[in-house]
Length: 359
Image (cartoon, rainbow, N blue to C red):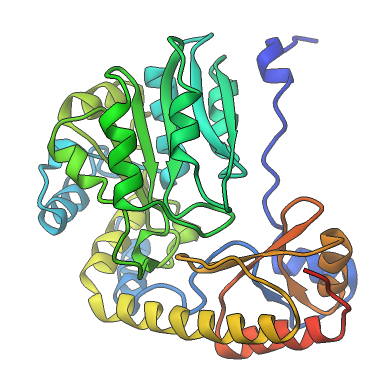
């Protein structure tokens, strides 16, 4: 039997949360709620849904627009950039993989925080590179320590802002300090999957360095606040030279026509974004209050989820699961919960109250 190269065999596959239907079937329960994958609990914009319905009737027999012309132009107008400075991907996950395959050679190093989004490390290892993990400090990226981890072999540096799984963010001052010291020839990948949820005015301005034509790639997604996780579509912004190289690696027709049309309509619906943020902000305040009353100290979040240090997290996860509440265990000493609808948040809290949880 053919064998994969050693660096591929050593990979541990990403294990996503199970669908609600599968868990209910396995556990013999009904009416579960999923608060594990940081999805928008109210779903996509009605305008996006109409675009999806229309797309099923008209375009399925034709290949999609391989260049994403209309979506790129809609994004370009919204963000005040050129279409040539945008790349469209099958979710921002695909764009992470494209960036790594474009700029990282076997043996090169990439610096990233830990814990952070696991796909960074997976993409680097799959390309034969070496992932250099730098521990978080106070639950957020320690950008000074990450800078110190840079070596002559470093080609990429990943920053999730806000970070997944902790929900913390890096400030303008911290990011400016990093960018003032990092050497040329290192691609700084800023994953802003949750940036629409940020309320802190000190949030780092990654676009400042894009406009200065620095080696930076900003990644965003339609899977979170736009509610289009099931369609898998995201985008990247970078200087045109970087986008040109990535497009050489990008597969043709990598995003489907329905996803492109839905994304265009989702971008236009500002009311839906405002509504989604409002629900998230209210849910966050409610969960902070209730968790604190239970003696749990949640990490302050700038995203649509809350990271909670708890003892014996796997046991808590399993008990919540049998109560029909699906959260995400984050190792032995923490869980992450998506901020849901008011009734979902209350059900999560009520389930927690029945457990003896120690922060």
